[in-house]
Length: 96
Image 1 (cartoon, helix red, strand yellow):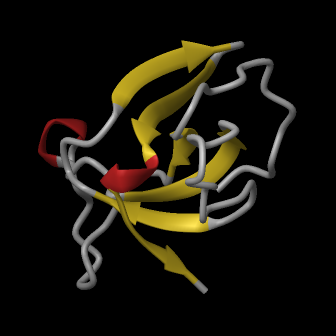
Image 2: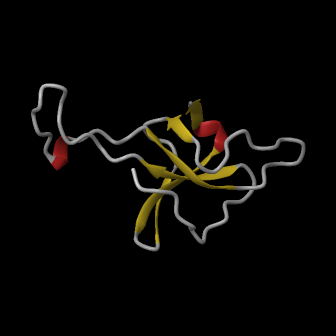
């Protein structure tokens, strides 16, 4: 995964900008997975967070590694990078 970068996107309300982890290139047995068969990643790193809603501050913070639903968020390309923007409620867990 790449290091955190300064992305010029400020999510609003309870939204979070996530950089998805790269898809697996090989199986546990060393078989190379072609691009057409790769699973969409379901984890990533938070790169920007919104201010939250009134009386509902956000739990996640920049730098957290998170798990989210397979179809969560909207894909977004910013400054050549691929990201997902989603509501905090689409995030299932923070990986410690």
